[in-house]
Image 1: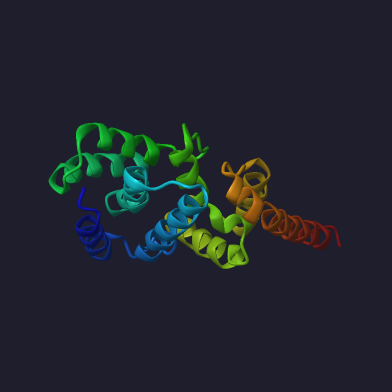
Image 2: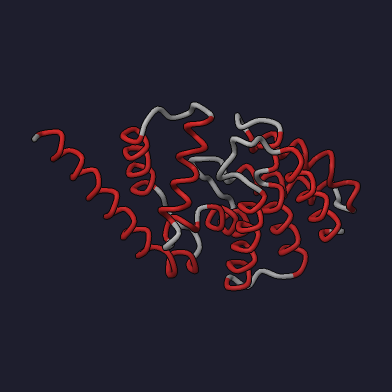
Length: 200
């Protein structure tokens, strides 16, 4: 499995094919998720072939956005099926990679440790200090793509999402649960402030 050559091709493809309206799902996002994945994998003691499988899924998990923002996980899997044989990946490895990619679809539904790691890596920002800036980029992207109407709808969506979200790995739970709760508290305070203003 020639991951390094695949990584080079993937980032070149993303740089040249992503829509300019994508402010969150950028090449930088893919790099960040790949870095998060490696960090979590190391903490969760994943190495060898399993680490390569996992890194490949992380690298390709959002490549479908280069074709469509609708069902992008399935599009990512189609691209993986076409590309990976040329980089020395066997059929059973490709199938596993596709299953890991599909586990990131919201609501997340990981089956096994590798899927759990990528799911947590993909949403690691929910419990970080960078939450507000990342969420702002995603809000701007969704407005451009007309998948959300206004900030009030966005705020409700984010509150519901953080309440329902669960980190799966012990590492993410330990490192990000308290931060996620802090971010949720800020959103709830903002919602209450808006409601108070509307009643004045």
